[in-house]
Image: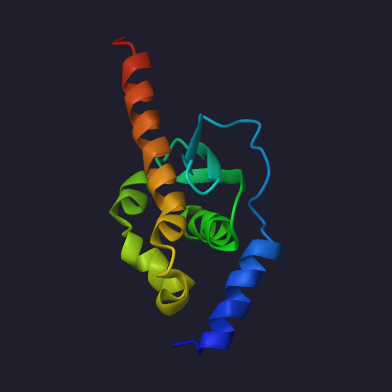
Length: 135
């Protein structure tokens, strides 16, 4: 368990040095989510491999440190996982990884990323089913 200052440093590092913040050319789905009231926006770009795992994920966005750090954390935690594993992730897990005592003052900012990613997966599943043709 990290102390408060370590959690703040971790959050700032995710925010200032994201490795997943860019566009993804070969994305299967791009989905934007946001909190219009506070200006936090996250757009996830995902590519699903033939094995049903997320083999490409990136995000773009703007907003507060918490929402953007959460977007990076969710991308890190999701890369390489199956869609089912990602859909099973809970907001509590993300809040705990970010540092519950720090981010609970802004729960919508902390949970925006995971909700948006789950929405992108839902869109992928729906779109994929619709475009599959029986042979």
